[in-house]
Amino acid sequence: MNFKDFILQNKNKIISILFILPVAVVFCWITFDIRFRVYSINENRYYQIINKNSGKRLDVPGSASGDNVKIIQYDATGSANQLWKFVYVSKGLYKIKNKYSQKCLDILNENGVTYLVQNQDNNGSNQKWILRKSGGGFYFIVSSASNNYLDVPQSSKNSGEKIILYPQTNNDNQKWEIAKK
Image 1 (tube, rainbow, N blue to C red):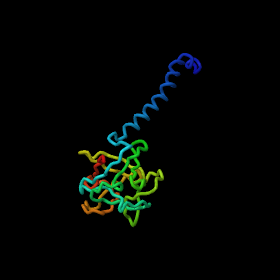
Image 2 (cartoon, rainbow, N blue to C red):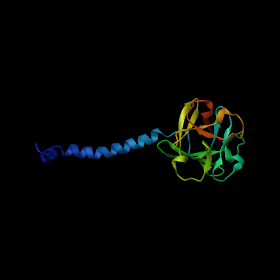
Image 3 (tube, one colour):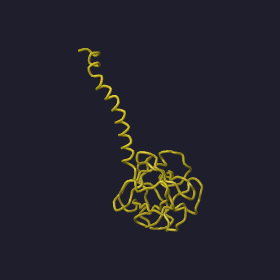
């Protein structure tokens, strides 16, 4: 049997495969995207991000609206500078925007330390975050650019402590509650 005869004899099977293959690819892509979405996060709501160890909130100090402002932990005030919106990007990645400043969480390397800052949305990987469940309703918040975790240095419980990014330790100073406001 030559190639032409093979094609003629199997024409219906080949057409079926050519139809089913793209459908399967699209289905897998949609399933993959859905699988990584955190469904407890509503993109139309704002949340407080609360450290498990200290009980303090992620905070833009002084309600600053500039770029490269270092994010701190602070006692609950209920103010817009402590409220955050999770904007789903794709495949488990989120941008995290502050309600007051409308700036995105970002990273800044300074003197060997990587700080959490806010900046204008630039759609870079430095502004995209992965939420990984850590158990008990808490999450690790992980930079897609560095694969490092939001971290309160030395497990500090002090208000005003600057948030950094650090390799995973599994300690409570890297675990965050995402609480509806």
